[in-house]
Image 1 (cartoon, rainbow, N blue to C red):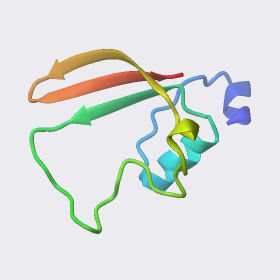
Image 2 (cartoon, one colour; image 1 turned 60 degrees about the vertical axis):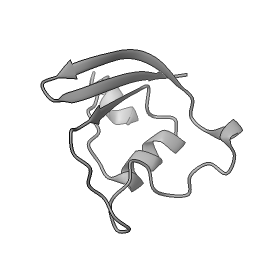
Image 3 (cartoon, rainbow, N blue to C red; image 1 turned 120 degrees about the horizontal axis):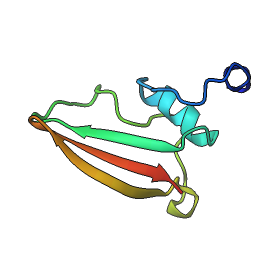
Image 4 (cartoon, rainbow, N blue to C red; image 1 turned 180 degrees about the vertical axis):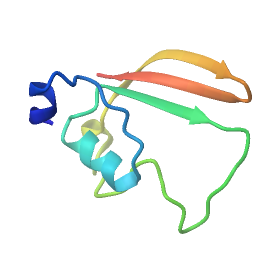
Length: 84
């Protein structure tokens, strides 16, 4: 990440799985989170979750989010948060 910043890259779109998301969040490398709520439900025991990995043991240690906006895009809803 330091090298990307040296190259003038200050913004990345992270579209990884739960492990990559956890790694970036737990290392405090995320400053904004956008969640898209789609008009269908998928899942199951083996479905990928938003954040995998160790997780935070206590809510007090969790990454806090501040709501910024709610937008409708066609049939989806996009929630935007800043990391506190």
